[in-house]
Image (cartoon, rainbow, N blue to C red; front, side, top):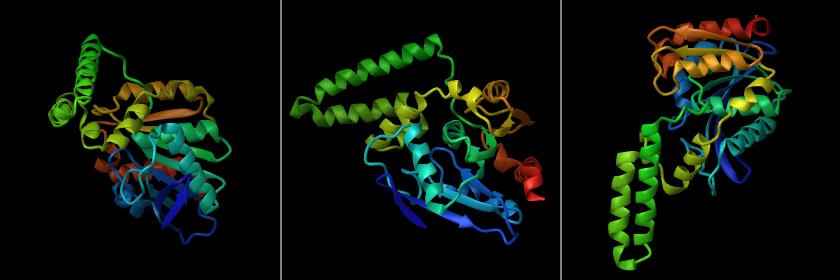
Length: 264
């Protein structure tokens, strides 16, 4: 199904459970993915819950925002979608970038979010290293120089080729494959530190983390456990950033138990 909200189309699916009064669960995917990443998980959960999956704007079958968005705009889009569907209270499962949106949704709309399962959730800024600061400064200098080159019509093609090479050398894989508009969104998103929101989150939160996660290292889950008032951490030994896929049945079982009495 498609809905146009806040000037941007969003694709979503509702998988309804046959059980009367089955609770709703919203699943939020990571950056660069789409709703299909949850296909196996929805098969494991659909006997107990009504499931809402979607493609974030700029992903999958959803439209691309006309202007760069940050986490706030993505959260507002999801909130508008839940209102469009007619959902007033929901549980959330979120991975990676989806965790950013879930954290802000729970902080800004505590009346809507009952419980959350966050796995490999992003949202905390990694400490800057001296090497990283040097690398970022070098990238900014080169970018500024190439932007000056582009002011000369005779040098535009050369400058654009050099900029592409620069992005390939210094940019993350997620950044490199984006178009210019979505790159601006990506930069805005990763610059947001959501840690100040953690103490205000009222939803009971279960954090499921792979101890071999290099994208969102386990210290992020440990920090969220300490600073979200009602939170617990489960560690999947050997699990990577996609531990919820690698140990799908275990993840589903723990999730069902956590959502608990409402799905009995």
